[in-house]
Image (cartoon, rainbow, N blue to C red):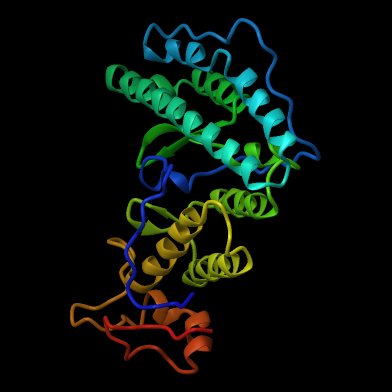
Length: 272
């Protein structure tokens, strides 16, 4: 796979809403996969609004997750196990969107509902027990997948490629790479992420979900080459701004072997 000039963002087969994919995860590490939450009466809310419907959306979800895990273990480390996981993930994301809809409805009715620390804490705990993370982007709350949770939950059941993919994404989610059209990590870190996904593709050419890996490679590389609205790379004349972006990157200088200040919009990087 070559690092070529400007690349177009690809849509994931089973993506979450926008750059909601790069959200903050809990940093805790467990030595073994967590057990699903105990079944029974779901937690309840008493806000008098849409948030009160969230526990019912999660009722029975843990038993479904456990059933899929057992099925995947029966086909451990095979593409069939990966397929079972991805099918489950599709259903999981749909539940996440339903929860996000309730969050949006709640804040439109009562804008300060999540500012109540008790409610926010209870919601964070509830979602965390079911593999979700309460996250925010540009001030809006949403239910994101806690990839670290599912990496541990399906540990030993998936192929090495899928386990590696999930591990990389869990690590990246701990540090959001962009927010409000501005870069949240250094340009060298951004380049490093693109290189990591290129190496992943080279290491696992037969990966079941290669479109997702390619999406992250293209996302990071195209952002590195073209910048963002609030993290600009080019001057009005179309040359790299020497004060910002790749022009300040030690990675790009070492790759090219010279200062990149004179590169124009047609900038391209040769294969390494």
